[in-house]
Length: 191
Image (tube, rainbow, N blue to C red; front, side, top):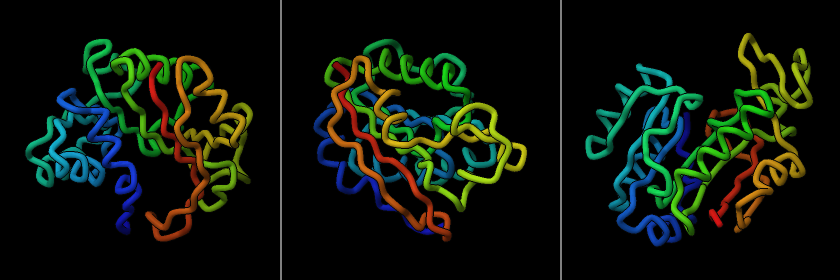
């Protein structure tokens, strides 16, 4: 994997909104974003489903708190306690109703004025499964045995239609995984 400095432009805002409140990172993987957030002095609590990825993240970012957890389980912070939630390419494995439930729980864990920094698979993400796979429901495919959801602008807007103020919603192509990956980057404030 290559460096993916997507958080850099949002870091000043992230620090401002998080303040002394904890930051929750959903699907931290090997800790790339965790390292950026902790390096900015933020108190990060991160989780991932993969024990192997967490082992790497713990070594990379010893100041963060990590746990192995499935996003479908209750979130590890109390309601209205997080100043910032980061979910980079971790919300796309679920049916639409379950995805909406997860976003509602993220909303509940953020304090009013808290921010969600989120990246979602794009329907233009042809290199990573947005076409040519069995469709489970609209834009939700079984990709090599793994369910994956892909978003167009209207789906991303619909996902965050209730209780969020949209700060930014932009389409990008990253080279994080060597091959180009199309995605939506959403920045939302909890209202």
